[in-house]
Every structure is written in structure tokens, then in C-alpha cells.
Length: 291
Ligand SMILES: Nc1nc2c(ncn2[C@@H]2O[C@H](COP(=O)(O)OP(=O)(O)OP(=O)(O)O)[C@@H](O)[C@H]2O)c(=O)[nH]1
Ligand SMILES: [Mg+2]
Image 1 (cartoon, protein in one colour):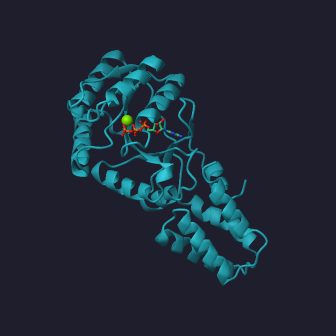
Image 2 (cartoon, rainbow, N blue to C red):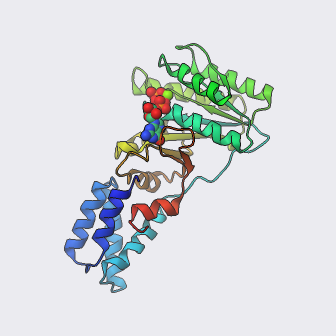
Image 3 (cartoon, rainbow, N blue to C red):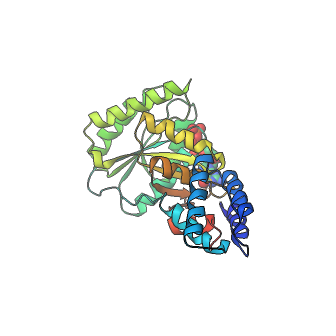
């Protein structure tokens, strides 16, 4: 799986060896390779050095669990559910190609099976095929969708979607958004406009959430993407995609550490079923080679 290779590296690094300078150097290199970033790597290694010194630990294997404990403090699962009987709006954000539209379809199926009345909103009006793509999913899944022509105002799409959801008594709008526009500033402005419309329509603050989709194969870039989107519209959580094809993903730990954002789902393939709630224990065990 995703972290297997990295986990194996960590495991062999911590197995059957005494703690010395070379060990910490190697650990540092491994963490940087694993996308944990220089600053966080330094923080973790410094803490482990202190623990080893203070507790007179000499075996690296003892530190493996301690490192898991440190990382455990940095990330969390997003465990809130949409509130039934109220209108929830989940805006799904992310740069182009990360898997927003596919993930929306997966989420729609999942939430529907949990008894929610779901409505899709085709808020990516920038790319020619985007509306059609979501439309195809809606048809396959038998979901309702609110859409407009390509090039129309995504703020108007979400406005219509809210009216439609209210009229039908839907519980949850899953709003697709553009991943690319003429430039980054345009995209952020467009997203802020959608955000404003949703607030102006009086959707309860506790029922309105913004999730950023991060592609596990993009490594460190995931951190800068998160900072960028979080600055434009305050994020509530992260969805990780392509966990099936990525080799490493310490970026999630960095995102957790710097922004405290919890993780909602992990996606592991292109089928509707390839989505699961983030499981912190499983994730950390595989990251740390502790399975
Ligand atoms: N292997 C794998 N592929 C995925 C996963 N999620 C999405 N994909 C694929 O990634 C590609 C892009 O997915 P989209 O859902 O179109 O991504 P998007 O973010 O909506 O892209 P834009 O609309 O262009 O911004 C598609 O080929 C998907 O099938 C996943 O979890 N695993
Ligand atoms: Mg899309």
C-alpha cells in the first residue's frame, strides 16, 4: 500500500540496531525522503534524541513506538458526520486532476447508503467536460444534480443547488469546484465567491464544510496547496486520493502539524467503493512499519 515502501524503510532502520549518531542521520534522511519536510524532521529527530537520552534507551526498536506516539499527536481523523434533517453543504476543493469529481461520486454513493439525501452541484464550470463528467456519475448512481452550462457563474450554480435542496428536503449538497482557471488568483476569487453565496444563503455554519483533496502522489506539494486553499477559504479537513498508487505521503503529517487539519477519507482506486474513512491507527502503523 501507500506507505508500505516507506514503512519498510523505517522498519529496517529501527530493527536490531543500537542508537548512535549514524542512526539519527539515517532517520533524518529517511524522513525527508518521506516528505515530512526539513523542519518537521528536525523537530521529530530532536525529540527522539531527547527521549533516548533521558530514558537511557539504547535500542532503536524501543524508539520506533515512541516515534509513532509523536506522530500520533500530529494527525487526526475527521469524525463529524453531516447532520441529518438539516441542509449540509460540503465544498470539495483541490487543484486540477487530484480526484475531486471522482471522490464526490464516491462520497455521494457512500452517504446515500448511510441514509442521507444527497444532491450534486456541478460547480466546476470552467473546464468543458467537467459538468458532463459529474453528470455521468449522477446518472450512473441515480443521483440528482444541479448544473449549468460551461462558463456560467459557479456562485449561481451553488445558489440554485441550495434552492433545489431546500425544495426537495435534501440533507447534503456535494459541490464540485474548478481545479484550474486562467491563474491561481482567479481560481481563489471564484472559490471565495462560492463561499460567500453559501454563507449568504444562511446555511448553518456547523453544516457547511470545505474539504481539500490532496493527491498522494504529489508529495510535498500537498503542503503548499493546503496553505494556499486554506488562506482563500478556511478548510475543515483533507481527503487523500490515489493512496493506492503513491509511494510516500508524509505530507499529511506536515499538514496536520502545521494546520491541524483532520483527514476525512482516503481513496484507494477509481471505483465507487474505493473510499474509506481515515483510520489513524492503520495509517500510522503502516507508516512506521509496525504492522
Ligand atoms: N488510482 C486512483 N486514481 C484515482 C483516484 N481518485 C481519482 N483517480 C483518477 O484521477 C483522475 C482525475 O480524477 P478527477 O476526479 O477527474 O479529478 P479532478 O480533481 O476532478 O480533476 P479536474 O476536474 O480536472 O480538476 C481520474 O483518472 C480518476 O479516475 C484514486 O483514489 N486512485
Ligand atoms: Mg473534476
